[in-house]
Image 1 (spheres, rainbow, N blue to C red):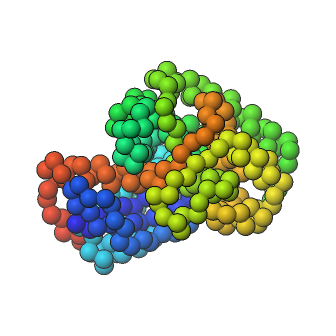
Image 2 (tube, rainbow, N blue to C red; image 1 turned 90 degrees about the vertical axis):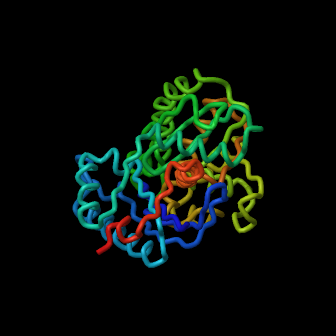
Length: 325
């Protein structure tokens, strides 16, 4: 079957179409995305503006039509921290549904962490033992730990790279005072969350997921993704510490020239490095492994599992599914 996955994140709105069947590896068929940073469309009260709501709605309509045009039989549509933390998030979701017919499911932070962990477990397998997954998003930072397919403990804290950048960095180059304040805030906020997760066990294997970790690993010397998903990639905290200090003195345009950093994410990659370094220090981690799968793949795998057990066997008319006229 052809499955569509619509991901409304803090940095990007992305539709991915895949050809899948029970027991298969998800194979991408087509992709359609937009660099819509919803958190930049929030007013002083934390509400998404009408302009941001309308831009999101317009893209969801585009994604709906793209999915129908390319024969999608099912659609998973979800939203993460940019929506769940907005003061009017529910109203925005209602507006999108009424205009497009697409229902976006709002994921809680711990759900996001757990589903990402599920994808990590599938990628690395049971031989990884007790896994700790760290995930940096635009609005939040997630941690999940456990020895099983789903984590024993999972949590989310408001330490996303985009959020921190907006809160602490005013200009093109971060000042020493701004970076010091950001580092202090990250470590203060992260400490209690790490202790909650640590109570669930000691990790045998530590993983980093998300575009931020992939970019940081690439900056620190990991293989480019043109070499394929299955090339092992790691991130060492000493390399990260060095590059984080270097990026403090760089302009946004200079960071955009670093390997693995897109212009859209160049401004916030410094904050991502601050969070990654603080998390690795808090856990006493010298090295972590990069997983190419994350939240989106976790949702796909969960859907395939339900199909394989016969929990979802119906064939869906794409026009009915996505609400097209």
